[in-house]
Image 1 (cartoon, protein in one colour):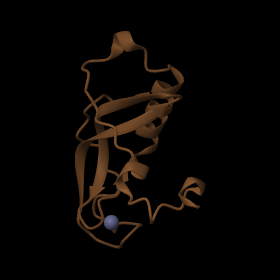
Image 2 (spheres, protein in one colour):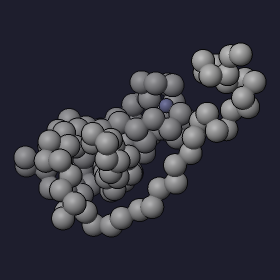
Image 3 (cartoon, protein in one colour):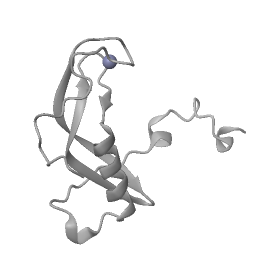
Image 4 (tube, helix red, strand yellow):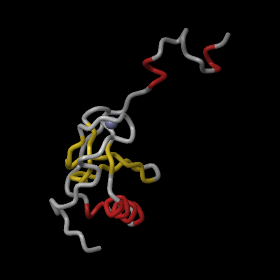
Length: 108
Ligand SMILES: [Zn+2]
């Protein structure tokens, strides 16, 4: 691991076309990602990524992807969290009108 955190020299994908949509509007940015770890939902902030302004897709370089895997393997220890968020939870079935719900209980 030789790349220092925040190294501005790492710009994967800049100057190329987006593999998803072909847009050339790629930029380096720090992004936030929600990750499920078992039944826990955690957020990793300030991840260096190349972001496509055409379709919104994000691309991580190999070192970043490896680091995210290591963080996942470490189990996201609560003591290492830098902040906490309250996250609202929505029910899809509560939103869908009963006569449109495909659930078995909707049948008579
Ligand atoms: Zn794109």
